[in-house]
Structures are given as C-alpha cells and as structure tokens.
Image (cartoon, rainbow, N blue to C red; front, side):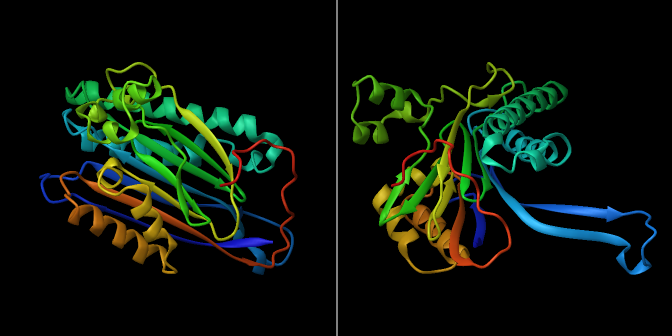
Length: 294
C-alpha cells in the first residue's frame, strides 16, 4: 500500500519586519538509475526512475536579533539538501532496522549545518549569526523529526493538533521546572531566549530526534514561531481539520497569524497524507518503537 501526499510551503515577512529571515524546504527523495552503456537494446538507455522513497521537510528561522539571520537560515537549507543528496546513504536506511543509523545520519547533517554556518560567519564577519532548525524526514509510515530551537512540528489526528517538538527556550525550561505555567510562558519575554540553535558562536547543537508512526489521514505542520506564538493549538487544529488542499491550509494559517499580529516572519509547511492507493511496495516490518499514537 502507498499513500498520496499533498504538500505546500509558504513564508511571509509579516507586518513589521523589513526582511524575511525564515526559510523552508520540501523535497522528494527518488531513486534514479542513469544507464551509461549496456548490451541490451538502445531504447533502455537514459535515466530510469524508481518509485519515490521518501520526503524531506524543513523550516528554519534566522535569529532576528543577530546579524545575518537570513543568511544562516539559507545556509542551513542548502547544507541539509547537499548532505542528504551527496553524503547521507539514505538508500540504505529504508527499513526500520536501520532507524538508529538514520538517526545518527540526521544528527550528522545538523553538525554539518553548524560547521557551514560558522564558515560563512567567519568569512562575512557576521560572527553571531544563527538559526533554528526543524526538519522532517519521511519514510512512510515513519516520520523522523530533528529539532533545535523554537520552530515547531505538529501532528493533527483525531481532531487534535499535538505539538511534537519542545521549544528550546528559557521560558519552556521554566515551565518544566514549575516556575511558569504554559500560559505564562506564552506571554513571557523569556520565550524569545533560545537555549539551543544552529549558531556560529554557539556550542555544537544538541538536537531532539523524534520518531512518529503516521497513519493515512494525518496532517503534519512545520512552522516557525511567527505562526505558533499567534495561533494556539485549537486554532491550528481548526485550520488543519478542514478538508482542503495543503496550499489552501498553509495560506490560511499564515494569513491568520498575520491577522493576529504578524510582528514576526511567518512560515508554514503543511503535509496531508492519504488516501491509500494500491502499490507493489512491501509494507514495513514491525518492531521499532515510536511515539504512541494521538
């Protein structure tokens, strides 16, 4: 069985900011074989495409208080794309048995991002540049989420938008220590103070890596804090619940965040899954531990 995906990403600088320091990426992971020479008939020469094996999603929010935030977020997008294409042996990570290896590769991609941000920062003199990074690597039905900073990933299922990621902010740390309630944290100035980022002058980022087993009909949202700080989970769930295309949904979410204040850049990547269609692809083996279903 195979699932049809409807994906769309959108970013906007908002009402106040003079430039957009957010970036996003949606990419298909396809297997291709290019025939250079063969003894069989010439009609098979050329490029032979295989079935799609996965997808890659990414949002990055350049730090607005730091010089070169837009450059840092762009560097991260380009570095992840190049790493997956040229370095990461993702064809060998298609089975669930290779999940641990894949997790290590995703962490390595994050370290490659930090290294490249540092190189660019030193060359440009913008030594404080940095960015958040929330990345989704989808090998159906497995979704791996790599996260540093306060951008977010949500899973909509059963009428609820569940936040998969945890903000790496001082405010969230205070919530975990019982010093603030979640509502107080949402209004706290400490909500803008990041504990982790992909930064030129920051320590090597320690990423959260989450694994989720998806179901047909699930909707995934990757977004920057320019959206999540203006729309609560109920508003996000209401938007994701509507039977509309990923494009319509993403545009509605970004517009709603701007209407609610729009004082920051706003980015949304929406991924709708389903319906199930017939396929000759084998179903994945059971046995890997994933986050429990919503």
